[in-house]
Amino acid sequence: MDKKVVQAILQFPERDLFLRGIRAFVGFKQIGIDYVRPERMFGITTNNLAKNIAWAKKGVLSFSYTPLTILSFLGTALLLVTLLLAIMQILSRILFPSSAPKGITTVLLTILFFGSVNLFGLGIVAEYIAKIFEEVKQRPHFIRRTIIKNGEIRSAYDSVKT
Image (cartoon, rainbow, N blue to C red; front, top):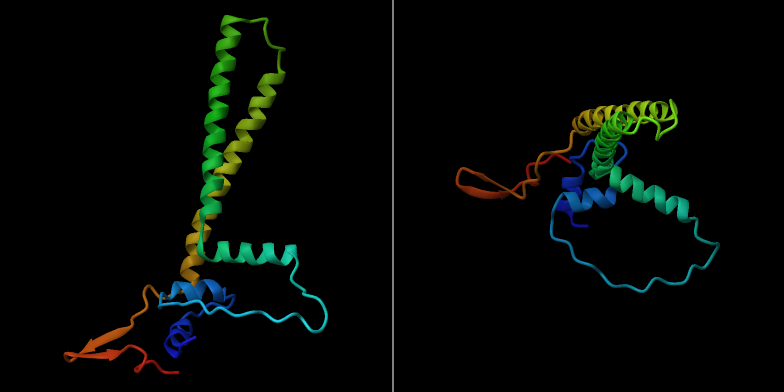
C-alpha cells in the first residue's frame, strides 16, 4: 500500500478494523497484482469454512446494515400477513361458521401476531443501535487527497502528524 493510503487508514480510530473493507472505503486507486502462490511448505491451512463465514460476516456487518433492514422488512411483512389471515378468519367465521375447528386458528393467529410484532420491534431497535454504532466508530466523513491553502494545492498528508 502507498503511504497516502496508510495515512488515510490511520485516521480510523476503530479497534476492530476490517482492513480489507477500510482499504476500499478510503477510495484511492487500486490495481491488482498477479502472482502465483507457492505451495505451502509446512502444515495445513487453518482457514476453514467456519473462519471464512466469520470473515464474511465481519465484512458485511462492518459496512452494511442490510441484514437489519431485512429483519425489519420480514417483521412488517409477517405482521401484514397475520392481519390478512385474521381478516380472512373473521370473514370465514361469518360466512361459513362450521368450516374451521374452534379455537385453534385464533391461538395460531395470536402467536403469529405477537411473533411478528416482536420481530418488527427487534428490527427497529437494531437499526437504531446500528446508527449509534456507526457514530461510535467515528469514521471520517471523507478522505481529502489535496488541500488548497493560500491558492496553493498541497497534499493533505503533508500536514498530517504521524
